[in-house]
Image (tube, rainbow, N blue to C red; front, top):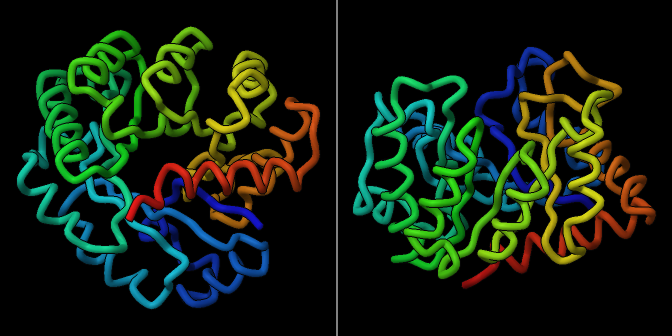
Length: 257
């Protein structure tokens, strides 16, 4: 019923699941999460992440380096393309710009972002974009590197409607995480109400950003339903419609081959 479009399964503390990854996956399935995208944050972790999820065909993969790691884990277009030569890999990223946590590596982040976008265009995979405190630079690089050709998603979106509009105009999707459920997120809920039916995704970003009513706890993909419930409320529809539309949008973006 649900698709979690962005999670980090390899980062989840399994002590909450009796030390068992199998139990974690069972609990996710019991919550009617039928598919999820396990997102790479750096290449050192990728091999272990790939091996961990290998027995679970419901898990898609991405390859990429988070902007916070761009300085310590530099990567180029060729290396990304090589890693992505795997039918389980449906996207490049996450990449992007984070000037809030990593202001001292702006140049490295920008170069890494460009390399990811070039790789995405070379192999026709969508790109997963993280942005924080870097609206204009993010939009400028997306435009300069022709994201309109490969497509992609603005993950865990927390920015303005004006930024969302510009991303939508470039063919991007907008993904909402548990942040949309937070009490002080009225502006974000307004964005969530305005994104077209065929351009939104839902995610957990697990193990981070647990939604209300679990805020402060370790997040996991089973709780993506709370994001869906919130969107159903702000979009004046029902949970089943949000689940179906977000799943259709996921397959439209990521199922290309």
